Each structure stands twice: as structure tokens, then as C-alpha cells.
Length: 295
Image (cartoon, rainbow, N blue to C red; front, side, top):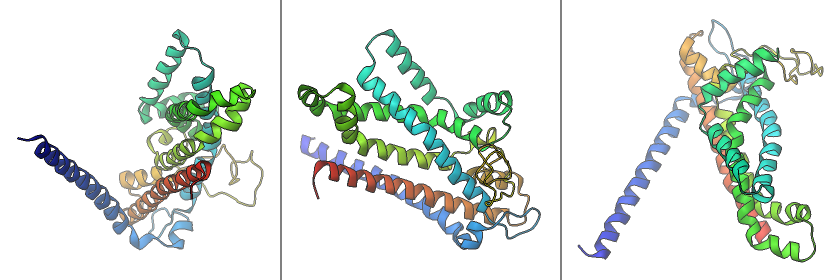
């Protein structure tokens, strides 16, 4: 068999495998969206869930998911970017750096359910906060932080290869170089990973079962007292998210149309994750083109 024939066969096999993966993904997304199509309306998206009767919505769960997303990113992004800068620019090679990397890799491999149990012990019980939005955000931060740190470190290392020495040679300090040269160059990759992390946060369920809770009390948007659990802006109120609500509907089925609501909520969840992923590609490309000067 000639080398050209082997190459052609390998190419065909890879195309077939790629097509099967795409077909599987499209079929899965299409199946979820198709089953939940009847519930994709404003009444369902903004309505309150009902107990024991049909026709409930997912308004509080959707709001809780968005709130958790914002709080988690506020915590995760500064820590992840800061850790990436330290590992890429300041950390000296040696045992300490190896220990830090080992800790990051260990955190990245932790199952979500284990992080949830840790959050239950520390953030829920020991702190006295109870099931709360903030406890859930801290648990999700533990899950997302290792990946974001590694991406930031790699992005900063890659971006700084050609420009750092030139900036330092012109008399800029290390921090001026990082702030004005390295970070802007690495921003497309960092921002892309942040948006992808947002999609993972939105779809997380296991860790939130034990930290954010499985209830979504009615909240008052007119109450701005953040220390009051009835306020929609409180970080210490129970906050059942959309993913947790889907799990609860499928496991407990406390309403007659539990399957219909779960299908609708699943469709909303998958559409939101798709939006996050597509946005990451588009925004990352735009920022890269803007920084590179291409149109």
C-alpha cells in the first residue's frame, strides 16, 4: 500500500469520525430543544413554579442561575488571572512551584460532588450561612479556578514571548509591561475561557445541591436590604438554580407536568450554554482582530 493511499484512507476515516461527532452533538441538542419547544415563551421563562399543580414557570431558578453566574465570575476572574500572572511571570522554578502546580492539578481533577460536600461542611455548616447563593458561588469557584488559572498562565506565556523583552528593553518596568503589553495580548484567549467558564457555571448542578440548596423562595425585587434573605439581591438566601431544578423535577416529580417543565428548562439551559460558547468564539475573534490590527 502506497503512502498516498494510506494518507487518503486516514483522511477519510478522520472525516467520518468528525462527521459522526458533529451528528451526535446536533442530534442531542436538537432532541432537547425539540422536546422543550412548547415551553419556550415568556410566561414559562418569567413565571413562578407551582407546587402540586401544572403550569409553573422557571423565573426564580433562571434568576438564581444568572445571579450565581455573576457572583462566581466576580470571585473567580481576579483570582484566576492573578494566579496566572504570578505563575507565568513571577514564580521561580523549584519545589514550591511544583507543589503549586500539583495543587492546581489536584483541584482540577476533583469531582463536583466532592466539592459540593466540602462546601456543605465549610461554607454551609461551619460558617453558619446555611444554603445560600454565596456558598454555591464559592463551591463553583473551586471547580473553575484551576482551569482558568492554567489558561491564563499559558495565554500570558504565549503572548509575552515576542513583546516582553522589547518592552523591558525600552525601559518599562515588569508591572508596566504586564499591564500594558502582555495582558492586552493575552486578553482574547483569557476572555474566551471566561465565557466558556460561564457556560459551565450555568450548567453545574452536583456541587450546588449541597451548597446553594434545592429551594427557590419568592424574592422581593423592591427590597434592597442585602442582609435580608427575602431580598432578591441578598447573597445569603437559598438559590435553587435551573440545573438543580431540572434534577429535582426528574427525581421527585412533584407536579403533574414535571416532564414538560423539565424538558422546557433543559431547552433553556442548552440554548444558554450554546449562546455562551458561540459568544466566546465571536468575541475572542473580534478582540484578536482588533489587537492584531486586521479587519
